[in-house]
Length: 188
Image (cartoon, rainbow, N blue to C red; front, side):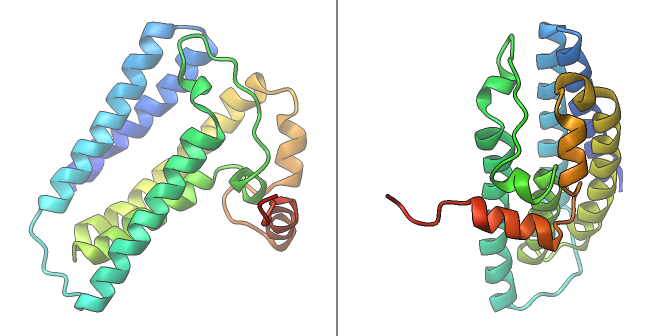
């Protein structure tokens, strides 16, 4: 559990990044996000290397690998591509993203992170990683609740409206329908 706890401090680094960004403390925001990412990546590596007694069949392990890659890709897409790398620049001009995966839920990264770790736990046959998926999802949810109350409502004037129309983490029928209808499925 020590490595899972170490990763929890990574989420604290993300919160500090948000607070430093809000207060235009440029150097400190980069220190915070770098530390946060480093702690989560390091924790993940240590957890994966930890001995496990979990038994998973080869077809399920292969499926786990493919789905872990898919959800890791969706995590990167939502957090970096859709939000835009400009959010992470020195003097960022953030804009509220309400389309794409952000039309499904306000925090799609929570879903993608959980599913990436869940399926990675099958691939690595590692119950410690499975437990970590649940623990970090809980911590991530607490982080985004704090983020919504302290950061996002101050950054974006339209955030309250977005909050009323889009679920926080679990998509509903309305948000799924909106996502499907708004997405351009045909290439023109």
